[in-house]
Length: 291
Image 1 (cartoon, rainbow, N blue to C red):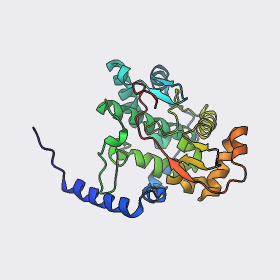
Image 2 (spheres, one colour; image 1 turned 90 degrees about the horizontal axis):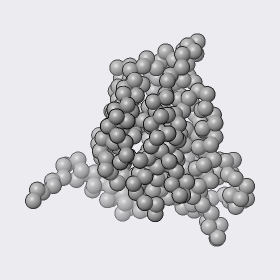
Image 3 (cartoon, rainbow, N blue to C red; image 1 turned 90 degrees about the vertical axis):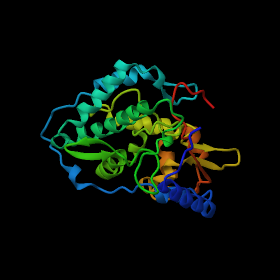
């Protein structure tokens, strides 16, 4: 039987994490402290709003339409096991098509949809490369002592520059558009994450999908629940990126009330603090039963 030896990096990181866990167990703000900050990468602010050329995302829409469907709890799941070689090749070609574009020459409205679709499509291809997989967190391929999952690994090259998923989210999209609804558009292939939409983002449908994505998540138990004692539990998304939702509990709660349906909005009236956070890192795989 082969023995599995831990690298020095894994041993050191395990020790550090264990120490943090013992010292700060249960404090979600520690995770928020380690979450990437929104920091503009000036290189990716270039755009040309005189360019009326649109980007064709029909291949991505066709893939999503075929392979994404909601489960009995309203969570969009992807049928990874059913993706044929042909469909996977088409998706990989689509990612290649996007990364080959001179995106700095496009209008900002096209760029926003481009980066969202590239992030989501590359995430799906990454899962397919390692499938079957219980959680994307099992893909411990990011460099750095305190890095987890695949988000810091350079997975694609655009205009000659190597990019990670975190680069797209935290150095391009978040600082470039400062719209907290982006957190409902980017999908990390997990059940706790906002839904992967069954259609590509485009300039034409952007606002509609951002609104529907926010409403769907906020009004689902993944987003927020209020128990009989009035205790409020929200997604860890609102802890990790609290700065995007007003910077404190009151800001997060105001955002939730803004997108809540009447019954939930009423249950949040007068609430000033969040009691707990939750998140499910299980893969959003249609082959996994609902828990």
